[in-house]
Length: 81
Image (cartoon, rainbow, N blue to C red; front, top):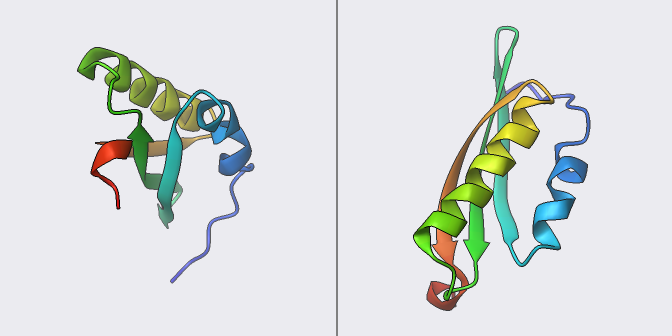
């Protein structure tokens, strides 16, 4: 399996972690010259669906700026044990 050499995707995600989100299960891969990532975004349980999806969209855009196509999955903190 190929290891990606990305321009610090974790660094790009840091602002979102300090905004009340936990970003977990970050997985990256490459196919040809394309880079991809999947990640789970854990948000406070009292956040609206709209707010959660806005943050997820912002995360995807931050990674896209690094050339990484990302897919996010949103989970509320309350459902995590």
